[in-house]
Length: 251
Ligand code: PEP
Image (cartoon, rainbow, N blue to C red; front, side):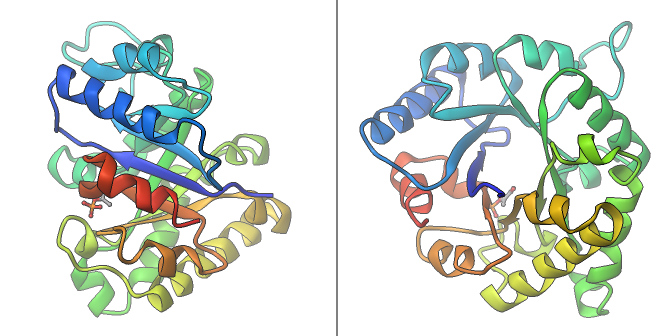
């Protein structure tokens, strides 16, 4: 059966020293606690190796926030999936709306990134979600379906089974505006139905679908109580142990 997961996305925040302190603080806060979800932190590339070495990675999984769409070679400034895997990170966030919007990551590019992540043993946390105009036009179902088809539905059932999905309505990211629990459940159920149509009910039922978008200590419980919401991808509230831990403990 699918896992409950709470994953942080630090984005371009924290120096290495600050990030290490945050990761160690979370590690300490989880010490001796039994939580009912997997905990993951997505950190800048520069932090991955140090953080993976400093914490108990059986308790806290480490994720990169991106990887290259090329295997290796003359791509100055890029970081490959193999490099990410060599740090001890086990996950990679792909397709975040900020990468799609600011760095022009297309479904085709993301398709390559997913394949390279999987080939290097990384678990992709793949983000999908509509912008406000699409939601207002009632196109959100079509948009998420197209995002799945464009970057993931080329995968074999076996490989698709390794994917974690994150539904993140772009209008809710960093805005303080959260999808209502009913809105989240409605589209998560639609995503699961779409997965069932493509890969069958068993794979659909085993896929964790996280909600992301201004999720915090105050709304996590209600969002996670939905049958098709299997946790959260947390931006702002993952930058402090005091804000992140109550979300982890919302399960
Ligand atoms: C995100 O960027 O993945 C996110 C959900 O951000 P926030 O929680 O800050 O809205």
